[in-house]
Image (cartoon, rainbow, N blue to C red):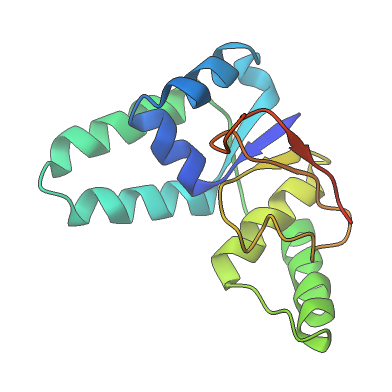
Length: 143
């Protein structure tokens, strides 16, 4: 696993964002993973949309294109440690964001996100890329 996609990047892919599609085409599908929580967030969004059936079909297609990464005991253990560390520093994160980030950490993968809360360098060891940033493709390394 080389990359783990956050929800906002998956949404950009579903919406055919050119920069995200170009990056996805350059990486073998086996090197990309979608955390199960991302699927949950996408499915929630589909059910709130005006085109529920169409959006659910698009999500199914995405699920068939990339491995879905489950929430494992290892991810949860990492989440507990990282959450504790961040809260002690006064830098808490939303639970879903943190579990998605810990999924990337657990797989030794780069988290691809456009979420400023995850791009801030607060999570030790997390390597992130923002494929939607101006000049997309720049890497943001852990601080």
